[in-house]
Every structure is written in structure tokens, then in C-alpha cells.
Image (cartoon, rainbow, N blue to C red; front, side, top):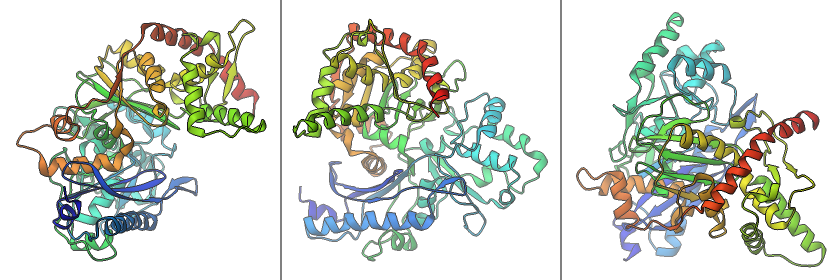
Length: 530
């Protein structure tokens, strides 16, 4: 295809995602393949006890990432972007953004990273009989009410970062259902905010006599494929400071990074899921039935199409593993041996496959920070063995790969063993899977399920939201998101799949018995090492 002609004729689709450290813009053609990109690095700020981003940083970052994408288009294809087929915006989920009737932000943006809503989260979880994590928007709102914050009475609109950007560019106060599910529980029957729980919340705060109700200050919820407004003249000027981009471009519902990750890994179908494993790790499984009980270890969100998803989120994954690899690199270089980092990782990861199935009696904890699933507010990286343990390099590396998924498996066991949830296939993405086959094999053992890794998994959330925007304009009548992704985008490609090896499955279960019993050692380390 002539990419220049696709761009100049306005048939390309733009996706932009605001991650925690990077804002990325991706332009795709009609075959869904990225043709240009631009990015902007940014960091959250810790101010007055709050993790936040300034609104000026939001717009500067958006404009810089789009400008860099436009520059790449001009240099590579010799054209400027004047129109697009569709646009989609995504961002890290949850948090608190409250505006007054004039559109003024009432308090600094409180991001998902803040853990200041414990009282509110616990009370709402009890009232709703539904797990409300601290990072959810409703927990932030209720905590502000419990704190007696003066601004609450002036709220005219509450949304998320993705919803805010979309609103400023289109004038539409909407959210994609996946993003909305991180604000407030979604009723799977209606695909909208849960009406019973909204009424329970109103009863809970009735004595405050605020001049608003949740349904008057919350965004409208839309499913993937629905139109979510048009880029306004003012919005076009905000996005493209060069003035080349015209107004009138359709936008898809703004989504969260969880939903775009599902789209980018083709894991939106029932009984599929994905595991993102890097500095932190989370697993998302699309449920084909409702859970029997409430579990504080499991968050319930939705796919961009509105299907219920169980999410296990853990703070720690590869940081301690990376630290040990760095130590081995330092050792090699002390002998004058220059090491290629990728080769070093590949060698050490593959060495783990030679180890005993249960890691030879070794034990490690990768807790750089606390881990709520196992009940830790703080963490201490730790390695332990007995005199009888089989202390080899292979077992050492295998232990650190196993423990990188230890907390995750604790949550997944609730899902798989207690709730008897069935998983047909899991898609892995992130740094743990960079060495071909190794992290994939370990995860397959942890979950006792087939694990696939796709070549496209590294494209990320900006590509995922571009796919959702493309679905909105290109889908056939009544075509589901799952069908569109499987056939139009991935063309039946399911990636490289590894089936679970029963010996590895049994070995991981034996390791987890040691892991659970040894948590007392980790707790003693936290208490003793201050």
C-alpha cells in the first residue's frame, strides 16, 4: 500500500496512551500495522502528600508526542496530517479528577498510585458487598467526603485522565466501559454503572445534602464500537499546535490501560486472559461466569466490550531478578569479560530450565515494596536456603523466576482453585517474556494453562487504543470486538503457544508450599531490617 496516500487521504487511525512514565502516539494504516509513532517522557510528582501530574504537563506531553509523530510522518512519507479516519485516547486507570461547573479542576489530580483511601475502600466494599480497591475513583470521592473536604459540594463532573482528555477535545463527557469499571462497579447485565450500588452510595451520604447525585456528575458509559464524539476546532488546536489537523474527526470511547492491553494481545474473548510481567505484574481473565464470593485479592473490571474481567495485581515482579542479573554482569566484567545484556539474560534464563522442578529446595522473595495479596505493607528482597538445598546456578535462577510470579499465583489460585474459573489460553507480554520460551514456560507452569506470546505484544497500549478506534469505524454490522480482533487484526494468528508441562506444574506447586510457609521469614526481615 502507498502509505503516503493513506495518510494524505485521511484513512490512517491515531491512538494515544498516557502511561505512568511515557505518553505514546501511534498511527496505523488500514491493515492495522503501525506506520509512525511519537513519545514523550514524563513523571508523576509527589506534592503535599499526593502523587499527581499537573494539567500543564498533560497538554505539553500530548502535544509533544503528537508533534514527534507528525514529524516522523513528514520525514518518512513526505506528507502532513490534515485529517484522520478516527482517534482514540487511553490512560492509566482510576484516580480522582473533580471539576466545578466552569470546568475548573477543584483539587490536584490524585493518581491511582495514592494509597490514601483505605477507610473509604473498606467501608464501600462492605456496603456494596463488592471489592472496591483504594485506587478506584469512587473510593477517592468517598474519602474526600469522609475527610470533610470543602470542594466536594462544588463537584459538577468527575472523570479519569482519559475521560478528561477526551472531554476537552470533543466536549463529550463519556468513558469506555472498561475505563468506567475502574471508577465504579459495572452491572454486567446493563453494561452501565451498577444502579443498586449507586443508590446505596446516595443513601450513605444523604445527610451531607450535596447538590449532586452520582448519575449527574459521572460520565456516560459506552461500549467499544460506539461513537464517542467528534474532534472540535478547539480540540484540534489543543492536539496539533502546528494547525494542520482539521476538526470533525470521530473519536472512540476513551479507555484505560487495562482495556488497551487486552486489545493489543487479543485477549477480550471469554475464558482468555493476559499477564503483563515487568516491574510489577498483573493478570486479567475474562470470566464466563460470575464469582461466587467477594475476594479482596481480586478486582473486577471489564473488557472494552463490557465482559467481566477478574484482575490480580501485584506490586513486585522482575526488579529483584534484574538486580541479580546485574550482579552477575558485574562479576563477569570484574574478570575483564564484556557482556551483552540480552545474551546475559538469555543465558541465565535458559539455565533455569535445567534446574530441579521444585527449585531444589531454594526460596526467595522479590518484595522491593509491600504486597497486599500476601499482607505486606513493606518488603525486603530475600534469598534463603537450607544446608540440604541443591544450590546450583540453574536452581538459583529458577527460584527467582518462580518467585517473580509467587504473589500473582497466590491470587490466581483463588481464581482457579476456589472459584473454579476455566482459562482456555493466556497471552503473555512484558519484559519477563523477552527471552523466548522461558518466562512463557514458567507462567504456564504457574497457571497450569497454555500461554501464548505474540510478536505484536510489544506494541503496547497506544496500538491497542488505535485498534479500538479502528473497530469503531470499520466493524461490520453486529460484529463483536473479539471477532474483529481475531479476524481483521490478528488474522487468526495466536502466537507461539507453550502447553503446561506436568512436571513443571507439580514443581511450582511444591515451590509455593515453601513460599507460603516462608512468609514468616519475610515478615521477620521486614521487622528486623529498618
